[in-house]
Image (cartoon, rainbow, N blue to C red; front, side, top):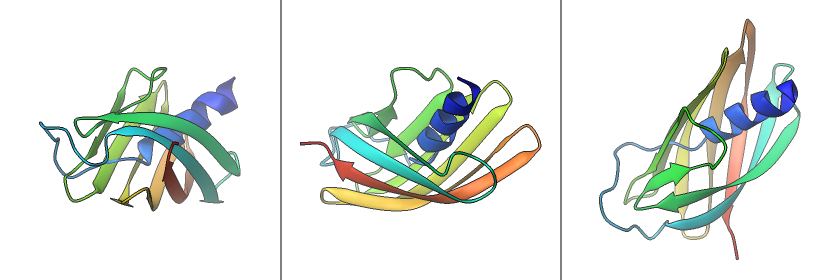
Length: 120
């Protein structure tokens, strides 16, 4: 369970944006995410889905999660779960996207990249 929380925190953190959108965006909808750890001892990969509504990225199981997608597709997010924190940024274009993430669980540091695909 602890590893799952760490992975979820890191994964969610990878979606982020420059400014909050107030109107419906072309990126609204469900997105499938894949997070890959390149440095650190976090899970090697983790997948989950998020929803974008009016540019705000949400995940149903995370309370301290902030994520936004701008009208240009710029993404920025951060998440905190207990002593774990992760943040990331990137870009969505059309039905896909990607970016970088980094975070920590206690003293352990991890980082990597993420990819996104619009759900069908």
